[in-house]
Length: 151
Image 1 (tube, helix red, strand yellow):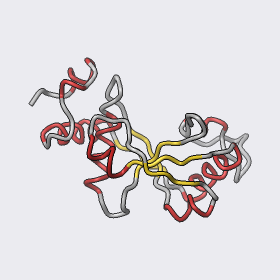
Image 2 (cartoon, helix red, strand yellow):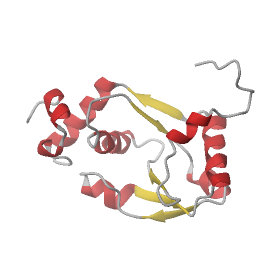
Image 3 (cartoon, rainbow, N blue to C red):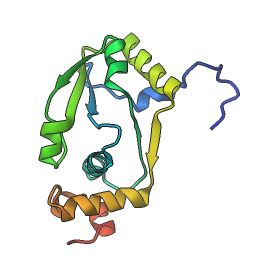
C-alpha cells in the first residue's frame, strides 16, 4: 500500500509489530531456499497456534545478512506442536538492541523478502501436517477445528 507521506528508504513504524521481541530475542526458523516442504511445514506449525484461520505473512532473510548486522543466532527449541520442527529448525536472534532490530527491518525492506501465504494454502498446509502426524487435530483451537476436517 502506497504511503505518500513515507520518504523513500524509510520504514513504517508498524514494521515493529511484525518483529515482536521477547526479552530482546526474536524467534526465527531456518529454511533452505529450495526447501518448500519444510517452509510449508513451518507455516503449518505456526499457523496452527492461532485461534483462527488467516493469511500468513513472513520474511525470508539470508543467515549471512543477519550475521552481517552483528546479530547473534542461538539454536533453541521452538514453541509449536510440531516437535521435530521445534528441535531441528528453530533459532532465536539474541541480545537484540533497538538499533539491530531497526537494521534487520531495513534489510527485510531493502531486499523485499516479505511473502504471503493465502488462507486456503495455510489450511492445506495444516491439513497436510495433521495427516503426516506432525500436528494433532485436537491441539487446534475450536475455530480452527471448525475449518479443518478431523482426519
